[in-house]
Image (tube, rainbow, N blue to C red; front, top):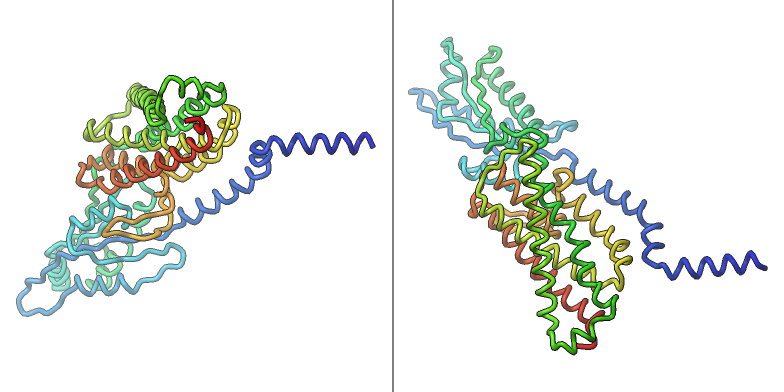
Length: 384
């Protein structure tokens, strides 16, 4: 009977520690789900944007090998490395697709493509030109480039009946050819500095009700919005210090900053604000610092693994507006922060190229704060 009593008491105490119990029993299934989504989102599904600038000018010939090549590329099938070739109207459109990750590489057929093949067929020593471009820091580009060069060179070889009668040019996107693995990881590390505000922000919000000082704030005639704004300002300063310290550390290890500093700062500010807004939601769902440290692990793992801070990720598309795809990771503001910083630091993009990410960052920040304000006030500010 004593054993049963001890078991009953231990079970009751365990149930009272609800969040710890939930974390214990759900962590492994949680990671199973994470790795499944990682597997699905990183599975090779390659797309190459093809720009056909070919305009045959050889007199007396109706041949158009640019169109023939497009037809050939549209018919290729490879079950091991699935790659899709899609024609786009011009080079600018192809470069935009690469920036937005709608395509992994760009294949350009220049104006003299057909004429070069005809000259080669007539016996002239001419190399048929074509160009491939993309972000050299991404694995998907390297695989896409290899597949593109293989299929195009095979087509040219068949058309001319000779080996290697082509002139292949690889053009890096932005400064991607100058970056090493360390530099590629820095945008994610900068956003990781903002993610840690999830704990400091939530603790700053929840420490007041835990210490039972809410009534004192009420007697001081402090409005809820004033209180939340004050805490937000302090956390924003903490976030900026963390980001600048992270950037300074990267400098010490030979990271070369490029792009607009003010645009970089704007992205960091919006990302910090969004994480602080989410920390307000977390504070509204908990009642003590200990609970914040336990419950906060769930969103921490999500923001780290699915926002691109640890490794590149591009989830399934939910819907698209224009050329911009809305994905599952895009529901987290830090995903847009990472992507925007990559475009600024790698592609040296301006505000005209990253404005979709800025709009999403701003929208998610507003949503986080509105939800957090409602949850936190109902949970901790009923005396107001």
